[in-house]
Structures are given as C-alpha cells and as structure tokens.
Length: 287
Image (tube, rainbow, N blue to C red; front, side, top):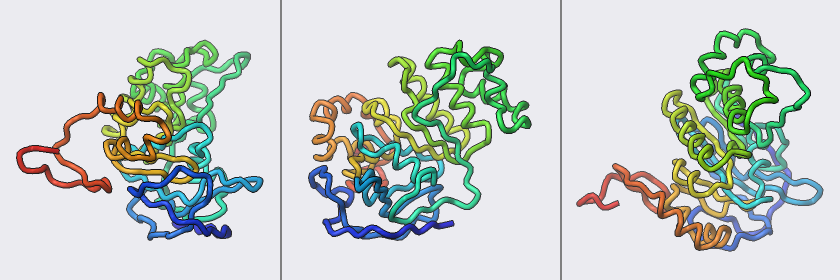
C-alpha cells in the first residue's frame, strides 16, 4: 500500500546522496524517484511542517528485511519526527510513503517512563492489551536477556532492564520491522554496546528489518548496514564507511568523530562503491 501526501511547494536545489553541500535550513526541491516496493517501509520526498517550520524536508529512506538502517543527526535534526511520520503516527505534509501490506511493526519510543507509584509487574506490562501473549512472555524475555525479571515490579528496574523490557514488548507481537528511537537512553556505555549487539542478534535470528535512531555515533555506525545522516534533510547516506568520510558528516559532527570511527572499521567479504552499492572483492583482497 502506498500513501501519497501532497501540498508543499519547494524551489531550492534538491539534496542528493553523495553530493557535497552545506547542511542548511532552507528546503529542497523534490525529484521523487519511484518508491522501492521491495522495502518493508520507505518514503520519497517526505516533509513535515509545523507552525511554519520544516521539521523534516524532502527525505528519502528505505528499510529492507534483515537490514539495520540507522538515522543519526544532532539534536533538533528531525530524527524522531521522521520515525513518527514513517509509521503514520504524525501526519506528513508532502511526499510518498510505502509500507509492505500487513507490515507488523514493533516500536520502542524515545522515552519509556514508568510511574513509580504504579504497581505493575514486567509480565503484566508485556501482556497489556492482549492476554494471549502470556505464553510468549518467558521466550521474549529470554531473547533479550531478561528472563529472570518477569515477576518484578517495573518501578524497581534499572535503566538497562527497562530498555530490555521495552524491547521485549516490541518483539512480543512478532514484528517484521523493529523501530528503535534512542534505545540506549539512560544506559551506561557497557550497556549500550550490549544492547546494540543484542539488536544485531535479533536481526540475524528473526530476519527483522531494523530502523534505529541514535546520537551514539561510533558504536551505532559500526553496528549498521546503512546510515542516514539527517539535519532536517538528508545530508548524506550510505554504508558507514562512506558516510563517516562525507564532508557533511564531518561538518555536523566534527573531524574527531570521523577519525574516531576508524577504530570501528572491520573487514568485509565484499566491497562497496561510493553510492553504497555492494561489489565483489577487489583483486588481491583490497577493500
């Protein structure tokens, strides 16, 4: 099913992948390519305007099966707005949306606050809205490494435990797409690395597509198949190595961020061109 949203005129030059340009606040003229019907979810020219301010402008994005796509960007870049618009939780003002028919989405929002005075066990929270999920509770908690806390009160959990419970809640409906908005908020550095590793294992085991929003550049970049660098519009996108060397990434996050990412580079059994397309290994094994 494809949704078409219209209604915003644009006059400035379009911002295309791989092209050097400034991360500016003006808007960009649409040059909509066709929606990728093989994607789980995607958009072309997606824009959201509120009170005369463009929160996101002319964004193209796709997420496929077994792919981790990470959206990075500074505060106020429109990352959460993009996620909500893709899931139709926030109405878009222009562009085209695509969702695979019958797509099941598991969503972990940016904030997962627990009312400390509310008596609720982890198990009860996981089956809210559908008691048929009771039989799945032990399995999903084991999958996220939290099998021992089913009978504990939510209010007693640490930040890392709460994040795992939120992830279990997103998984219990057997989603095809997992959407995670700042999933390591309130978690220490060791916990961050463990959660990102867990997300990768879930992708491999379940065959999920994953749309991840984060500002934790280094570990996230290394954990992603593709990265979209957002500053209301798409500054650059592609495989992590390509994005980390892009002038607009350096402009947004500074040269230290790009250099530090080198610590996380790893070897592939394939290589990519500058647009991110996969290519066979080069002669002699050079990537």
